[in-house]
Length: 385
Image (cartoon, rainbow, N blue to C red; front, side, top):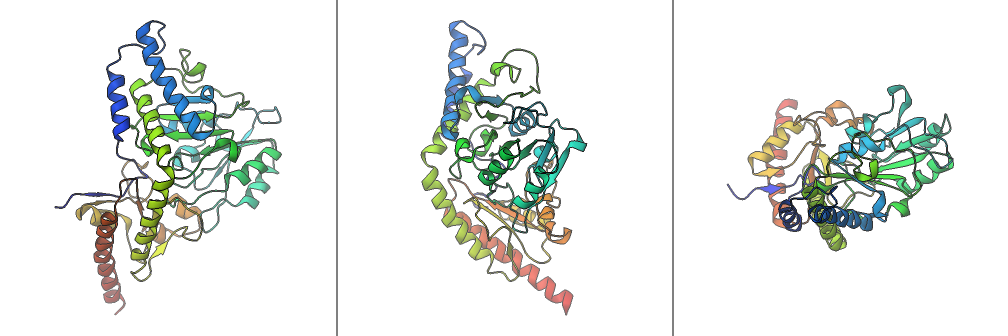
């Protein structure tokens, strides 16, 4: 079999050489980063260098970066009922867009009766009119809207939402996990109060995330209590090697952001043109601004599980959407929120590209799709004959 083609970068990315080297060096250090002796200071230096790198990449202050075990923990930490809005009072409700990652849809530590969902359009973009109506229907709220959707790649109007949220006395949390490294991102420019990130989406190691808090945001309640790590906001000895890898990956991705995004967009457009050559193929969120690397598509009668297996047998890794469903291929809640029925949602396949994706990889994927798509069309013809 030819070398495999990896087109599931939104699920996780290969480990960058820079991250691997940083982690190997960190594993040679013996000190605990909370210790005051020389060995401990060496470990602490790596953590603080990574903190500074992430802060610089997203327009934050290093003291406002909190390292966590993953993006899911970072989201859970962010969704805290103890937060105080810009008016000074506590946020009493949580509003989440209907297309958020499962760790946000779950609501963090908010009671279920204090959570409401913001509708999205058929294109998968947050309905700002519905958000405005919800903001005006109750007490100040924490609003969670992702920067870019992990399934469709649709970019969300977070800056516009931030203005509305702040005028209503609330706070805005942005899950920026998919956006980092694929599009420019500055939390001050979008006026986000909290933003979450994950190392393994940008070439860092799995199992390391971060929450970035804007200056002046108060009332964040720790999920993990114990020691005074992360300035008392997240207890537990820091994963020094993982954090060092995160910092190295951030530095690497920032250096080539523009050229990588431009190249991936060109490959994505080539991919979509080939996919659409099969009659009836639909590209979801194809009419709005998206990440340069993401394509979610379907065709009449397509079953995602069958397609994912078919691609895999041809040596190509793709997915049916979010990878956070314990390996199950199941209908997408994102497409359901966009107004598509189960028959369509069950057939969505996601291809996501990365910095090392080549045109040859895209051509192999298209060759496989032509086989699968033409087989599907022949079966449909027989069934309707």
